[in-house]
Length: 188
Image (tube, rainbow, N blue to C red; front, side, top):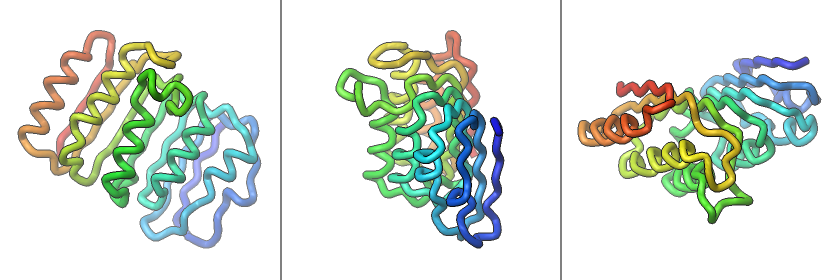
């Protein structure tokens, strides 16, 4: 099986406990708000798939689970994180995620997703004080240096509850990156 989409709505056990899918290239995981934490990382460790497309639409994955899972998947070229994923993360967790996603010489070994070309992030909660860090991460992925194998080519961002000054900053800095970047930014 190369493609697998699962909606974890029943919260009756973890389907990932029972699966091993080494040929998987596309994985989409959607869960309801009150599900137990799925064991995605264990599934990935056991299967060792060469996933290129990953969608996580969930609010139940912890920062540690997401980062550890992404660290196992350097083959990802398309990543979508939505559905309130960042909603429960504390500021230190968000900082850690953005740091690991930012290309730079100090992160050569710990850098996540060096092949990423298509990124979609939905920030449901306000990322006050972190908009600059989000944009710095995106800028670093356009430079094709410091461990990057691919440059970011497609970007989709959704920010809920961003202030007017944050919206202006994002639009200005994304416009600088537009050359060769298919970018869509929404503020809700």
